Each structure stands twice: as C-alpha cells, then as structure tokens.
Length: 519
Image 1 (tube, helix red, strand yellow):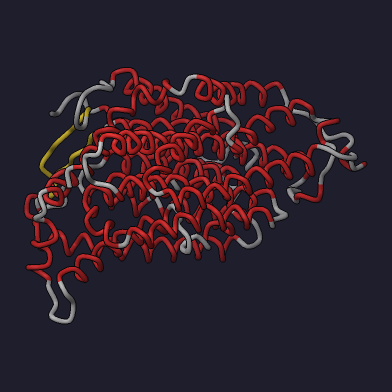
Image 2: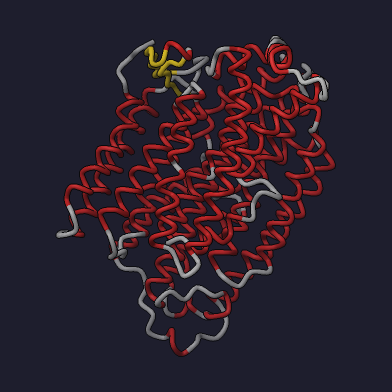
C-alpha cells in the first residue's frame, strides 16, 4: 500500500513554498511572486504525473500511504485518491496559479499574501487526499485560517465584516459536523471513511450509534437524523446550499479578486466533495428520509441564486450568485442519485450520467468561475477598481481582445455547446430528469435566468455607446494574453472532447453509483 509518497510530497510542496516566500522578506517583491508561482507550478507538475500514472479502470484508492499515527484513538495517517480526488487535485493545481496571477498587482505585505495562498493550497490538497476523518478534519479547519486573513487583510472596505461572517458560518457548520463524527467514533471506534461506509452499507453503523448514544426523548430514527444533519450542515455551508449561502456574496465581493478565485474555484468544491465522499456513502439511509426537503433546497439554490444574480449591479456579486447557482446543479444531481438505490438498469444508467455530470461540473465551474474573476481583476486594474454593471458600455471598441476572451468564458458559464460548461450541465439534467422529474424541471428555470443575466452582462459592459472616460482603456498585454491561452484552450478542449476528464473519472462515478444501489 505504501508506494512512493507522491501525495505527501504534493501536500508538503506548497507549505515549503509558503515558508520560502516568508523567508525572502519584502525587499524583492517580484522575486517573492515568482518564487510562489514556481512552487505552484511544481505542484501542477506533480499532479500531472499522478494524472498520467493513474489507472482509470482500477477499483478503490490509488497512491495510498498508511502509517500508524495515534493508536489510542485508532487514527492512522491514510491518504489516497480515486478519480474524484485526482480531479480535485488537478483543479486546485490549476486554480492556484490563476489566483496568484490575478494577485500580481498586490503591493502590501506581498510575502505574507503569497504564503497564505500556498498554505491554503496545502490545506486543499490535504482535504482531497485524506481518508481518515481526524486527518481530513484538520485540513478542513486549517483552510479557514489563510482564507480568513486573505479576505480580512487585503479585501475592500467591508472586508472585516465579510471575513467574520465567513468565519462564523463555516465554524458553526464545522462544529456541528465534528460533534456528529465524535458521536460516530464513540460507537464505532473508527474515523476511517472506508470502514464507516462499509458499516453503513451493511446496516450496522447507525444501530451501533443509537445503541451507544440513544436518548429516551428521541426515537432511534430521530437520533440518526440529528447526527446526519450535523454532518450535513458542515457541507451545506461550505458549498453553499440555500439558505446557508448568505455569507458568500459579501465575502466574494469584498475579497481581493485573486482570493475570490481561490474561494470559488477550489475551496467551494470542498463542500461538494464532502457530499460525495462522506454524506452519500455514510449517511445515505438518513438522506433517504429527508430527500424531498433536500431536493427543494437544491431547486431553491439553483433558481433563487440565479434570480438574485439578475438583480445585482456589481460584477463580482453577479458571479458570486452565479457560483451558487452552478454548484446547485451538482447538489440537484447528488440528491437525485441518492433517491434510487435499487437495481433498475435504466435508472442505474441515468445515475451514472448524473454522477459523471457532477464531476465535470465541479471541475468546469472551478475553471470557468476562476477565469471570470480573473477578467474582473484585470478590468479593475485598468479602471481603478470600477466594476459596476452600469459603469461601462461599448468596451468591445477599445479592448476587443479582452472582450473576445472574456466572452468565451461568459459563454462557457452560460453552457454553450462546444465549451466546457455545456457537457457537465447536460449530463446532470439528462441523468436527473428520469430520477426526479419535478425537481429537474423546476431547475431548468435557473438555466433560463442564467442565460438572461450573462447576456445582460455582455450587452451592458461590452456593447452600446462607449463612455468617454474609457476611450483610452488599454487592451490585454502580451503577457496577459499568453497567460490566458492555456485556460481558454482548456475550455475548448474539454468542450469538444470531454473524454479527457470522463475517461479518467468515469469508473469512479460508476463505482459510487453502484455502492448506493447496494444499500
């Protein structure tokens, strides 16, 4: 099981980079930036090596490492990845350099800023590779620290309030989740995700918990639901799921754009990852009991967030609500897949499609949303921080290259066929419709509203009469164009040939769906 410790090295590289940039000090800011970018590039190279070496047809986790850690608590250092974990590592490795490039103009406390970015990357890698709750929860919680300070110290005028709101919401969810897993540990004496999933599958997990912690005022079913909702809250806040989403718009809008890229491109995926890695395999029987409620919440997340985006005037708030909307599609599909646990062949095929759609949507949303906030950062740099929807008009006349490339990212977010945003949403709706027809039909409203507000952004920012004060606005530099080429190219590549990802993650998606069928 203990092969070459690729995952441990991948976790350590950004941390070493953080210490390195802190040691460099503030005397040479350019060198600090390039050093941080170099360490993120090393992480990307290691991730690509893992991608190349990954066996896409093998069951279980690969590149596993297992070492005794805290024997008295039955806690081991166990890491490993399947297709889902590998995909999240690749997304993180791509999004972090984008966030750094979008933060290139930051001048205050430069070593601290880039060190915190690298620390956040370490926490993300640890979260996506840990297979033991104790180990996993450490990284889950530590990720809050660099994220909080990145928002608080470099954000806008309302950053103090936004950072505190972000911290309080996520801490409350994390505490609830921790209490649920402590209850499970007291009954099972294990934190291992694989062992807990096996116990849930054979029906012994919750009876053991209830027997240990049963309270005479609650029925066994109610005890199980309380424990489930504790774990559920931690992930629902992180995604976020309606109505636990209110921290996100202010946090995204007040954070510096480079930090917003990290939050929406990678950190929000921690919540969806938790639904897939923990809630579905460990709490599926409890999810079944409240599935209609969860589906209504998913529909509300999709539709209401899109409707709210339609009313916004700030570009960052528009795409903050758009992020909630797009991740709502993932939750819709997850709850749809959880609804049917039987062996019907036709429905099983649809579950495979929906699960693959979730994987693709997580990656594609992370890539597209990060790119859109990168464009907003470049626009703010040129306009002195202006980003109001009504502050522009006719920009295509003076910055045609910027307009064209951002237009590609906007159409990707809209789900235009031929770009990466289309296939994930298509598979989600294709798979979810036969499983939960009413919820999927209502969620289509979100697609319509998304098209309206994205086309509205294109019209009001890039079309119409040009305002005089923007007549000399500079277009993208050669360096900016070269930096954007790989990202835009990847949007086309995944749109035209999604098998680049599906070929690697399909087996994992099928295995997850089959696991649910066996409940």
